[in-house]
Picture 1: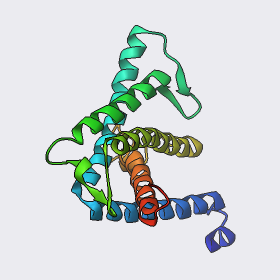
Picture 2: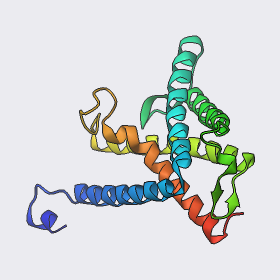
Picture 3: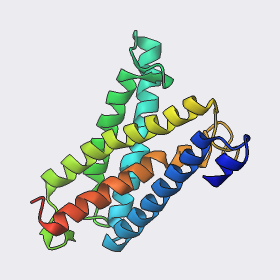
Picture 4: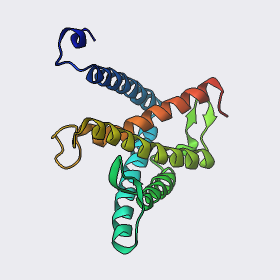
Length: 190
């Protein structure tokens, strides 16, 4: 903050961005640690929900745009995303992780979170909400990029928007999942 006072080259808006992104990444890291402590099945569930939401949205949007007239989701933030793609992402990101939760290696429905058994309804609701949160995370980071006039966060993954573009929905969902688990632990939910 002092740099913005001492030098004209240091923009206060950039200082706030760095501060807020640092806090967000720290909270995201803590959330990953909390979900990891619950067990690998939960991390895999969150990852699959995010990846399948993103993949489902991409392919549904691509197929629909070739066969039908599509509707823009939010042209100001992400001009290529469509409502049809978003719906496809929610369907893929909800149903496939829900079905995969019954693979013997995962068996989420037999897992306990602070002595509360996870059942099919909870798994389906979590997958649905996390699919929506994944898209909100993606759009939030797209809004940041649009605001600052950058196409990619880095060049590590050419054509993919950088590392943060690969992690935006995952970080949002890890934080969401950690908050839900905290509410379960305190008895505020269930």
